[in-house]
Length: 69
Image (cartoon, rainbow, N blue to C red):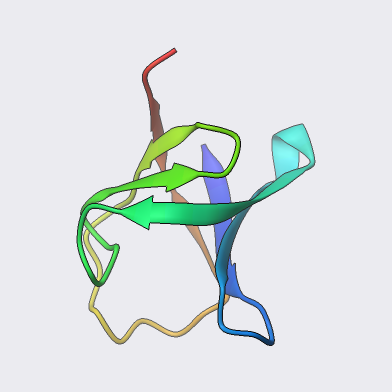
């Protein structure tokens, strides 16, 4: 699914899913750089993000895979 990852003015990361009109904060990351790892959103969704450079500029839209139920 297409997911936009962005950082707000206070530096917090969030994910926006246009098809669901859903924006949730990223509450945990498997990897420090987040790319190529698993992130957990505030609503409990678990997303697998693609491998990208650690210095990838935000905001960016990526293809993520939802894991779990």
